[in-house]
Image (tube, rainbow, N blue to C red; front, top):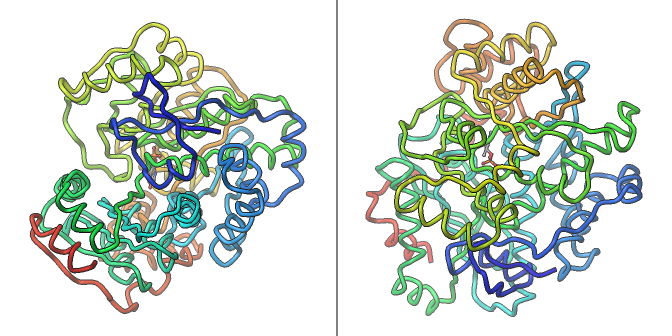
Amino acid sequence: MKYYSTRDQKKNSFDSAVVIKKGLAADGGLFVPESLPTLTKEDVEKLCGMTYPERAATVLSKFLTDYTYDELLADCKEAYCESSFPGGAAPLAKVTDTIYSLELWHGPTAAFKDMALQIMPRLLSRALVKTGENNTALILVATSGDTGKAALEGYKDVDGVKIMVFYPVDGVSKVQKLQMATQTGTNVNVCAIKGNFDDAQNGVKKIFSDEEAKAELLKNGYILSSANSINWGRLAPQIVYYVSAYCDMIARGDINYGEKVNVCVPTGNFGNIFAAYLAKCMGLPLGKLICASNDNNVLTDFLATGTYNKNRDFHTTISPSMDILISSNLERLLFFAAGAEKTAAYMKQLNENGAYTVSDDVKAVIDENFVGFYANEDSTRATLEHFYRDYGYLADTHTSVALNCAEQYLALSGDNSKMIVASTASPYKFASDVYEAIAHKTASADTGALDDLSALTTTEISYPLRGLASRKVNFDTVIEKDEMLTEVYKFM
Ligand SMILES: *Cc1c(COP(=O)(O)O)cnc(C)c1O
């Protein structure tokens, strides 16, 4: 299986190991597989009898053909082991007769980013060997919270790799800051910058395009690499859990093979929901893909009208991981629907005017597969409380956005097919807002909210967040935003 860029009409192709090492294509496009492998009824029946790591290795082996099945199985067994994901990697909780919650947050940082970031570092480590790379890969990450911690946990103590994370000093939650500041590992570094997330992101992008800096790093034995969600190494592992959830529903006797199941995903960068689309294209019997947004509803509008327009107000919400105006992975959908030439043109328009309108052929693909809804802040809180009171299901704020959109779809469409809702974070990761939505009062300050929520709901705090406040702080550096490169050199 070869890969090429979403913007490259000549289709220069690369192996998956190269693609995982590079992250982004040289023309600014995203890497996509040349074709999609199929998932037949027989495949699904076999997968039903497998463990999660076996399912993951089987699905990944269809895409990463320059890795052996044994390599992938060894990596998946380590990535999704019991000590990292106690009770299983992607359990499916039945919430109502129709709605199932696919809980993707039982990993080491309590957010769904772990599903990809536990396996991707192992794939990168092998990619360095496969491509004959002698230098150390230096991963630079700008984070608004969840990605940074998940990347640190994934890359800590991985051979041939070092990782440095930058976060806005006042732009992440107390829990998120503590999670990162107390990180352990011999190859990690964490640094707060005086600025917002965009400053952190721009600083990292600047280093990636700074030829002088790259030459200096190379002289010292380092190449740059990235861990963000446009890397194919993050997307491919996300296909697995949709396949796995479908198998679990068959195994429980809740569906027969072939029955269409809808999927609803709380969406930011369009990575998670795009993975569901790929599973559907491979042949998994999925129905509608419901794209759930918060007040930053650029995707809701796009899916309804075919016009993407990021020129709008940015809203800070209680589902911060979905506060995004440019959904990078959408580019991959455009490519699959319209090809490289049109995709490159749309991305140019987005860059220049902040907007583009897709042609009818793209709109037809969207209408056949996707539908968008959004939930505002009050509706998100109300849904969180409603699912807790009426169904005894405790969801985090991001999952509540999706549950709200799922109910909007059910009411509007009359389509009562079973629905998988992607649950992307532990309620404890956003404990203050979850507590407030249920208790209608403010939780104790800082990490006290976790105890408040636990006492109120008699549920257990997710294991990675227990005792967070008493852990040793290893990183407290705060720098000016123009000191990022200096800090990278120091780390090197
Ligand atoms: C990253 C994230 C999302 C958005 O996922 P995308 O793949 O970027 O669409 C949703 N919820 C949580 C909790 C996240 O961390």
